[in-house]
Image 1 (tube, rainbow, N blue to C red):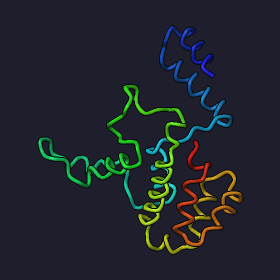
Image 2 (tube, helix red, strand yellow):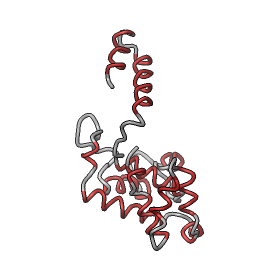
Image 3 (cartoon, one colour):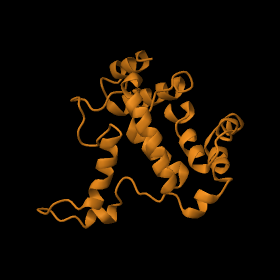
Image 4 (cartoon, helix red, strand yellow):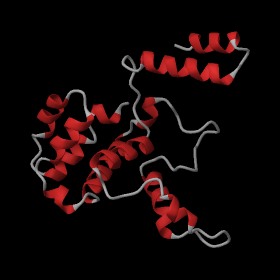
Length: 178
């Protein structure tokens, strides 16, 4: 998997645009063969975007523009930091010098799975009330975002409430892995 990238480096004498092209090509070639467990930040972005939650992450630029240097950071600007830290992936405090781990098993712990369940539940309540009450909302989300909607609908339909459907949907392997 890494050989084409090494060859691009050597052939182009380290010319980064060529190396990046090779890396992207490899990523597309191996995408169907290997799926990586998503880190919490990517997962959270996916949950709020797919569910149409009324929560903005990252903090909107207009809000960031209101920040004044020399003053404490307002709570509404810190909320996303707190949420990501709570699910194990603070955006500015990586435990490793090269960033957060790309190894799937580093993101698979009972505690982090429980937190993802709770945050999926929280994302449900960030939706518009009309969407929370809509019994077809999860079918819309599934048909819009998945290649195998019937399989996923069969699993999600076993839930007793829309809240449970939300928690199940966003913790299925198809969502946890990318």
